[in-house]
Amino acid sequence: MSEIWGLILAAGESKRMGSPKMLLTFNGKTMIENVITNVERSEVNNTMVILGSYREILSDIVLQSNVRICYNDNYKEGMLSSVKCGFKNLPDHFQAAMVFQGDQPFIPPEVINSVIDNIFHQARVL
Image (cartoon, rainbow, N blue to C red; front, side, top):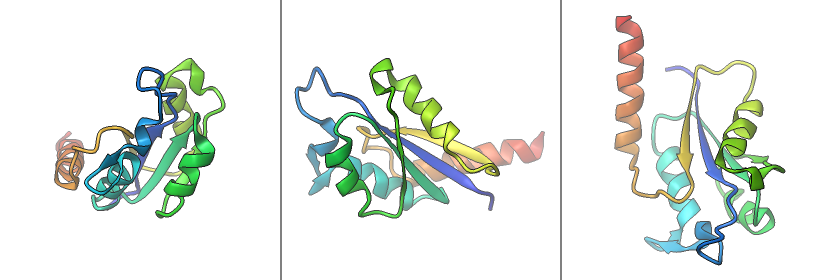
């Protein structure tokens, strides 16, 4: 299959929560670890995690997986700045990228694969 990247947004300040959401425990791991695991178990070929706030704490956890990290220095400007950071740091040649939020661990690999299969099926039909 083609080179598909997963961009996981994890740069937010978690202001309303008062502490980093990515560090909350879910299924015995942190929230961000669960999201990374789901993306890595899918047909996504490469994963990049975009960090901003709490980057020192989160990078130690994130780098335990086989991912690239992008640091968004403009994270206070909102989620779109993290999306831009991720896309700017993709390699020159990639076929597709999927964007995931680091605090949504309920998207299993099967759903990710279904989206990939449907997108590529539609592209072949057109």
